Image (cartoon, rainbow, N blue to C red; front, side):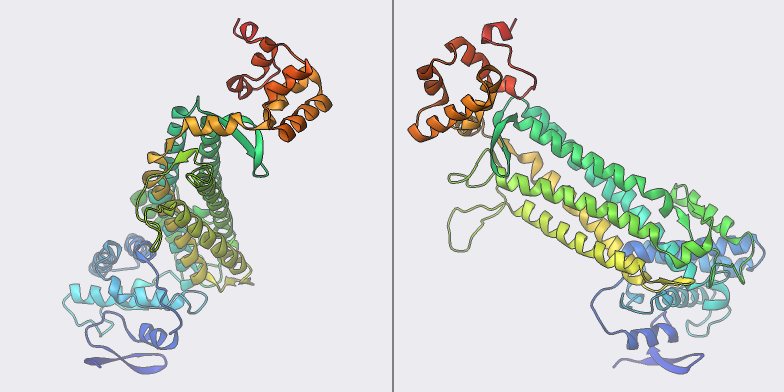
Length: 474
């Protein structure tokens, strides 16, 4: 064990690594919560630093902090925001349900570094005290949900929306590229009437666009910040103008429309905003997974499957089968979606952790929400860049499979009726003849009428058959 120093809190003395900026309360939490390898990530720690920076600026303006102390706290908080002290935040996500351990970890680090900036020792708690100065007008109970909202908002703005937008754009581009590639539609995994490959991709692009809108629709509640409610929502020990002032600074710095929660009791006892955003993320994950799954089906085989498209070949697919190439990007994306969906269940259960004036599952909810945002963003970007952008269509394979589909008989129904069309399909299947051959043998339509009805590109455009092909072009 390395050199230590003695720190103390209300429970007495405790040994802390000599060079650590954190103090007694962090060390106790570090000793108590040895559960997982999960730690809060860069965005969340930066958000905690932002809250402390804004609080110090507000407290200075309100006359609650002396200028030299406020400047030292802000300088220290800036270093936390920049990531210069990430190793000083070692606590497990699974800890006290209010996030008090992490809030005090941040308070201790910022106070110790502020004292160092002012020329004092890091273990003295003076002239800057972690509770009296860094945590002034605050409580873990309003700081932690505020940092959760801020980190989620920045992750959505900086990572998720751009990634989903890029995926949607890539899919829309392919929809245009493949607009005249006619293929068999499929319902129940069985042959259905024709579509174009472009139409399929346009559906994927629209699905992503709806996912973006769903996430954006959940953001207004997330922009309401709990800061100012302190312990139970009453704002005890906080200046009446503290929350408005601090949140104003956060809004200006982040370029976001942030507001003080209109009801602090809701903001601290309920985590409905987080649950709602998580639900939108789950929907987006389902959409992205569905698209990824379709892509690997369309590319399946290629010689013994559908093989209507080719995905970029990125790496060997087997340790035993030479030449095998697998749809690795769609598979990775589907796994991410599964994890996001699972985390949404945990977040939903976390929402049930609001009892009276406080939710006590906030650390888990914050961790899982940020994981979902950042990982889904990475997966969407990966799907766009390493998969969708390089997809190539195989028009000949599409035409080959479509030509053998007896479901094309659907186009004959307006002319010969459902029952007779079903008879045609049955005879074609049993005899091995084409639909055209059976129809001609039965004398049901002329060659020109049949050519018009079985114009597969026209079938993708909807409406009723117009008759012979020449008439349809007029």
